[in-house]
Image 1 (tube, helix red, strand yellow):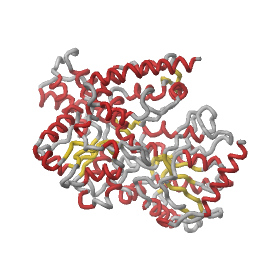
Image 2: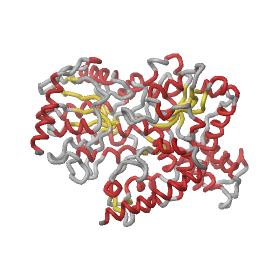
Image 3: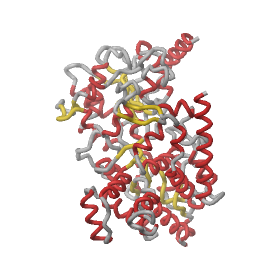
Length: 560
């Protein structure tokens, strides 16, 4: 039966090669020669202009060798499980050398039967450790970078590129962050000139907009959502914020929450009582903020039914009907709206998810030596965030707090806030490239990836895709749009920590799901539908307790 399925998939794959369209300059079929690599591209919010720019530069550089890049028609469908299925058919059938794709975790191609759905044929992709990451990036002029690619990449990315077997199969090709889009032209019309840095400040801005006569006259709401599940998992934008709030308390604890495992010198170790990861009071605080943030009164009516493009239009437009000031989205937003809203691209700004205000109370509140009121805690929390945004050192922040607020803060507490401010949900980790196992042109494909890690490509990427490369920490690659430069500034900040809500390890075996809580399949929609039914705290308490109960049941079933 397995042989039949494999042959069937292979037949479908080969048939697809015969009916390719030529859109966007893509070749209709694979090219079968020993000097041309065939590339499958996932056409995400970054578009596809960058791949053709890369193709031109690559072929110019290697003209004497005769190396070429054959780009098959870019598609939104060239990601996730369908691509893994195609890889499973084997290089002999597909002839695809390089997948520039997304939504594929390294474990999925590792051949490990414990974590890979398609494992009968073993590894589906090449290990890139030696042929790419331990090599140097190649510029458009052929010159190599000073540092190896492994030293150029954002460090937090690397664990997400490596499978549990230790091999580094994936190559990150985009640095893209989830956060909030703000129409500052609208926001300034309400007298707000400074973006909120804490969740309390954000809700205050929401209330200000909601209660204003101007908003009522223009039918403007503080925020809009995209809660329908569509291409690219758009409904997870809200999940990105919720997970960021949890990680702001402690990134290491957050990663353990995703895995039900603890990390030591020898890697990850399964927890003895894994269900106890849900017995974390910080989760309750996060849920309470989530319920408040998702209260229907703040969002454009019908936000639960909006498709992505519709939700984005409500932020960009300012008409005599429902529109919004904020939206949870990411730095890819600008590239997705630039065609239809070119005149308003200078009206939008990008901001990281505000720091959860309960962290300030925990560090500086009544139960601490500071003994500050909740209001003063939030003021101090916001001030430290502002200083961290300016890339100031811990000592400089301590001095500023003393001079401006008359408060002496401990270095450990300042560092805790600065680290929280630097936490950013990176969906760039989801955009990965793979070289097919057995590719006869893997060395040429490796050269292409090394060029994608160059400073030259970083400038191409920001010009063509309005997005950043994860290999550009010290590169002066700037955009003409403040929105893109603000997103890049998050990564350049000394306190930046990339997170990604990828459930792995024991957690998958116990819960058999990829949701944040065992009781909720679509967290954002659940919060939206329930937020105004009870007080936020009561709703959070109920969800919190139910999650613990269900996690314990799942754990007991796992042990059986």
